[in-house]
Amino acid sequence: MNIVTQHTNCSAGFTYMQIGSNGNIGKCMRNLREQKSTFNIKDIKSINDLNDMQDNITHKCELTCDMFCDKEWCFHWTREKVKNGWAYISRFGNIRQDDILSNRYENIHVVIYPTYKCKYDCLYCDVHSYNEIFGSHYTEELPNEEWIRFIDIINEKYKKIMLSISGGEPFERSDIICDIVKRYPDFYISIVSNLSNPILDFVKSVKNHGNIFINGSIHPTSKHFNFDIFLGRAILLKESGFNISVSLVGYPEQLWLFNRYKEIFDNYQIGFVVQVCEGMGDFVLPKNIENIYGVYGDYSPC
Image (tube, rainbow, N blue to C red):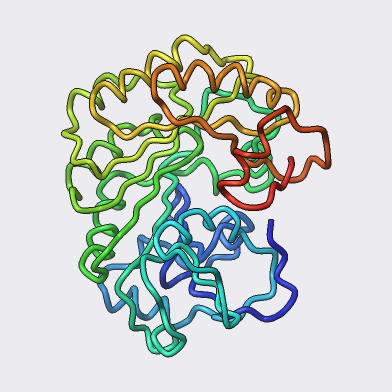
């Protein structure tokens, strides 16, 4: 995590927001996870409601920031670093201070969590911990109609939209994933999945418009993990025309499998990288892994 040591004028809530399974809206990951949000998509009935919500968002922030999680997206679209004290989180283009303060902007990255359910039991997963702490906040799920209604409002207001679907395991709610990708062919849609659920119906029913990017997150230390099933589904997605990549969560007890897995996925021409895992302290890295982290910036071990 990047630690913000001074007031940062942040565009989160305007160019970026996260929405939990119960509809709570967080301007950033920390805001959502700590249940500090006072807004819910069930209360947003129109663009005017969305504008009113955003007018009440504080721009200045000095909290621990999840900018690292979105740094890759930010650099991918703008190729420039954060400057002038403004944390432009996951935006498609330059956003000026007066645009933020006057509620004028055209692009947004929305992260939604349709469900926090998951078949895995990963020791490093924060969702399980938060589920124990916050209870119903992590078990209530919205029906498809609520998600579609809110995304329609976002689509009406913004010109360019990046929509990330995560969880939990999002394919526990494959119904809403199918509805979204069919309804919004112009969105840039990213799905993060551990591929523990069947995906054949998704592959057969969704016409890939080239805008759907799936990251298969691999978790070999989960007792329910089956590599052959994971590999088969990853290959199916690739051969069906989807943009598929795979990431290994850098938990120490599975990080050393990196070279073994990379060789396998290279053979199928599926991109393979290590995903940073935060909070576990320093440890020795396997050979060649530094070069992988070089793509994303400084390495921050688990």
